[in-house]
Length: 156
Ligand SMILES: [Zn+2]
Image (cartoon, rainbow, N blue to C red; front, side, top):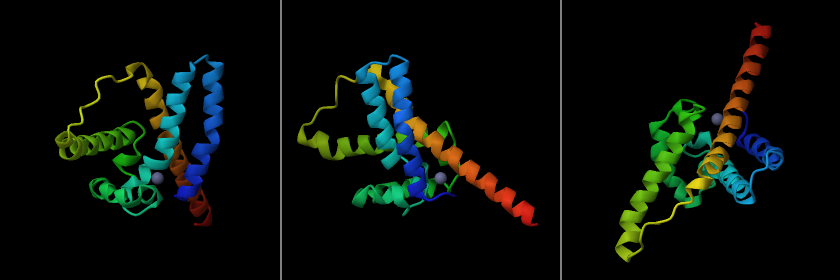
């Protein structure tokens, strides 16, 4: 598989193209901002390679990377975590679970209330921002594997 830095470079280098497409499509500034913020956050912190306990994406979380060890144990490398649809859903679900536990254990006892207003109108752009880097990652992994198979079959 390509190195994590290759994935990150491809993902971040293509962001201007997606943003330009969004501008050309007439998307609003808040929509484009939600997309771009989620795209960068997803590229840095929600990589499909979180299924590797100590790979770059888990290390980017710093000490909080420990929180992704159960995820890495639950999902074998390049299994469901690399599925185009379900992979990002598993990470968002896991992150939601961690957030809920964190809120219940740490914030709620201190009197913090759950957010009441959620900007649902931006949810599609945010989801696109989360999903697109994962799709690029999976596509790059698959192209890399196909190229390696092609090289090894020519040798044999
Ligand atoms: Zn991968």
